[in-house]
Amino acid sequence: MMNQPASSRSAAMIAVAVLAIIALAVPRLAPNEFILSILGFAMIYAMLAASWDLLIGFAGLVSFGHAGFFGLGGYAAALATYHFGLSPWLGLPIGGLAGGVFGILIGIPTLRLRAVYLALATLAFAESLRIIATNWHDLTRGSLGFNLHPTFFRLSGEAANSYYVVLLVSSLSIAVIYYIARHTSLGMTFQAVRDDELRARSLGIDVVRHKIAAFALSGFFAGVAGALYAHYLGLISPSELGPATTMLVVAMSTIGGIGTIIGPALAAIVLYLASELLRMIGSTYGQVAIGALLIFFVILFPEGVAGWLSRQRASWRNKRKT
Image 1 (cartoon, rainbow, N blue to C red):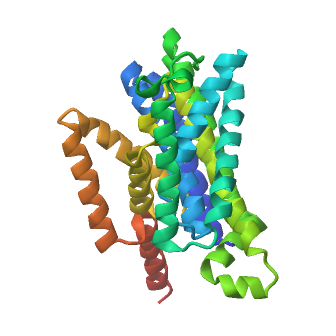
Image 2: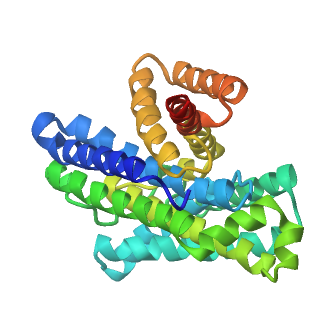
Image 3: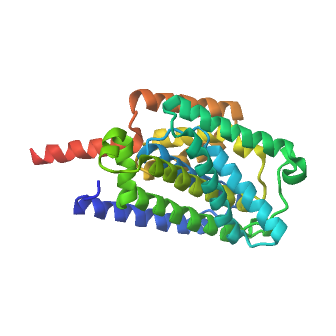
């Protein structure tokens, strides 16, 4: 994966360039505030899906508590910027720091757990945060949500500027996640631990430290996504900490292709847009459709869209050689 053929790299660069041009042109092509708003949320979820893929796809750690990182980052950013009069830009690293610290706090006590037990433990942590956010009315305003913090232009009617902020932050974050996973020694070490923990230990890799680092990194980017969400929408509520958020991210990553970063990010955008369209019919139908699609991919295309495309491309190359 590290040494891709020149043709593959060129095709990838062209695809990225085309997507960048389209993304930058969206406010001109569709100057509708509702459309820009939905696209903004879709990009935030793309960032969240990429951060979850870093944890499960590269470190092999199954977490069903990713909503905890996301919601905590949103609350930390919103509360800090409101109480200390800070800029929303400073809210982003604050949210990331909160998510990263929470990742460490989850990682340390759950390191001995595996598979479903780890997933349940992380889910329990996230649910604990949701209950706290719901009941601590003096701080979070409970189920009403917190909406006293500053936003990125959106409530001032500058939807295009707010869209570009989300595009910038989410694109850079996904690019950094991809670089860490694919082009750094840390990413390679994550994969070594994922593939064979005992062998990794025999090679002198500190497995515990790298698992905690994976939780911290994934939590950091999920926290930044939560902070971006809070400052984009102008509201953060306990529902963002709920299991529905995590399940949506799991579906996005599974359908896009776990272990690819880009696949989950692109699938997140498509699925979020589709879910918003289905919401017009009824939220129940939207959840049913996403659930059915997830089952379809798990059974027939477990490697996801990105994995299937990669397999088809490899098959096509083999046919050309013969």
